[in-house]
Length: 301
Image (tube, rainbow, N blue to C red; front, top):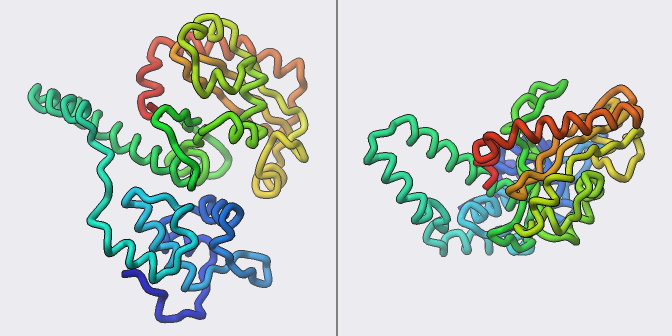
């Protein structure tokens, strides 16, 4: 059972709340906007402060999410109700390993392939982590087995935590559940369209059309002036403080229907004629990725 702390008047800042609850800062902010909970107070510096009772409820919700429940169905319940619900559940639902995976692991064990076993288990843990990350962002929205996600494969930047995709607080895996919800994310929808693709084609590729689409779909996504652009989110948290002037993305679609994209946030302004030069680079990267696509995209399947 989870109860509020012994010092109910002791509020936590968002970093401490993240540590105490196991919920990332981005998830805490997103729930605040979407569900109206948590509803932190603000200190003299306008920083969020989370009361002990809200932290306790967040920990209870996190505990139930680990059994397979969705936050949208838990937010409205009281801490007592959440504790009762947690006590009534016998344990987490099993999603993994699925029977085909069990057979694969058994074959590796029978072949005494220690390196292959380590690789398979590492991939399994990564997939579970990415799926849970995507479900946390999705909240109460339904997730189909065929749902596409934009998965962060690599990252580098001026802050130490930007040098590892595992350290990303809000972009490890971005779910794309429907055309309507993708359209509500201007940067993603505009990127897809500037690549010469339809959102429907990315969400549910038609095998009969993929050959034609993937052969002509390599282009650039270009926002010359990032500040104030409706296509670039996190203006106050990212664009302004880090002096982002232009955004450039290049990529396209692979024969499998997977989309790949490289996105640059530049502190120097990028002219359109310079951005156009990246079209050929997009095609070159596409040709390189094709030879080992199954390896590159293994963790996002």
